[in-house]
Length: 198
Ligand SMILES: [Fe+2]
Ligand SMILES: [Fe+2]
Image (cartoon, rainbow, N blue to C red; front, side):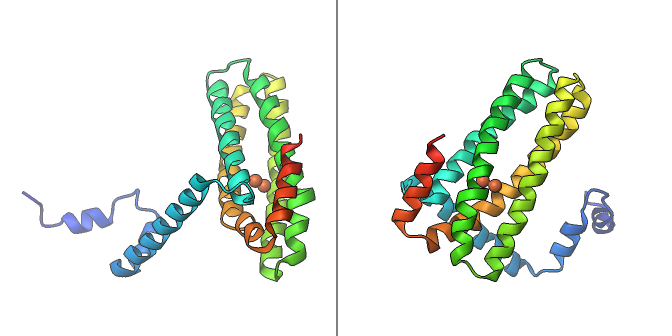
């Protein structure tokens, strides 16, 4: 039998975040509509990636995000089990991630900035700040593993994961899409070839 006060108990549940409380103020029909747009957008990006346009920055770099995610996952598992091999995985991740970010900083971002409006340029500047944070975190992670401090490494790898998750999302829904929209296929192809030539 459902108790009379179920509703007030439900409202008082401690794990209901501020975000979910504010979400409840938005009518259900609007939330459903927003959810549908979100789903349609995800399906659009997934379809776009499945079709794998060779001249698409979003496709090429989105795939590299997925590959780097795999290495990060491997690193997290190594650090979790205090495995000395985690240093080798970190070296591999650092090499590839630094290459990825350097290409974005020196090749992609300047090319898009030249054609973009003020709003897009501000988004790119915020991505550049993210890159500095990511580089700092990688260096701290490297020092913590060199010192055998796995406890610190666990916190740092979680922070790196959080940073990369937000950063990659912003790029895949921002500068990569802008690049595909603003740059010609020939220019995009030349940029992607520079990325592939390590
Ligand atoms: Fe980036
Ligand atoms: Fe990226």
